[in-house]
Length: 263
Image (cartoon, rainbow, N blue to C red; front, side, top):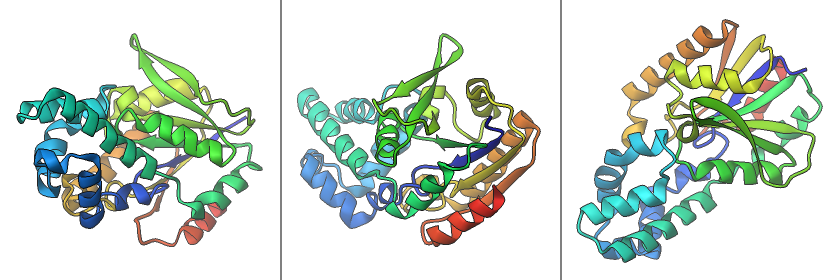
């Protein structure tokens, strides 16, 4: 029976490419290729006029990035059809780039033999990310169980067709209605885990790996988010919580060894 909870962040931790996608030159290339650039969206406008005004809704509802971008573009005067097509293309490119770094593979291989450890991918993200995370887990030989809020109840939904006995839980804020710094996120996670958790480790950058142009990476916000998240975990589970810090320039192999030692 699982009694040890290993919480792994996605963007900026498991997926370094998700962060690199937002680097200035790469973001500009994606804006051009998707057609958003032709609608007047440069990198600055993307962050300040598209992402910032829509992030709260994007991270706590099932609307999704594509629909939010399309709606915001229409508000800024773009034709509805072009806005929808180009927002959808951009979102597809972003999700396709959001892969689990191959350097994390040894961790998931080791977890196959640690039946007492329950991996939980917990992320503040857009709704589209849940399917992408599940697909990435399937590549590593893991079945994904997504936690979702429906009619004020938490349900478990198997994502994908993987028949693996190795199961990882996915908790996306967009499907739980609240972000990780809020105790309610973890209360909903606890309701969906169906496990008696006795200790917890968190591997998370808390947003520090994000690009400096992204408001999410503001150092004060990062530190506040870290403190609030850990406090919320301790409050909800009432068990020891170990933080294994990670940012994009950390050595993943060393982080894996620290996780294994902790287990």
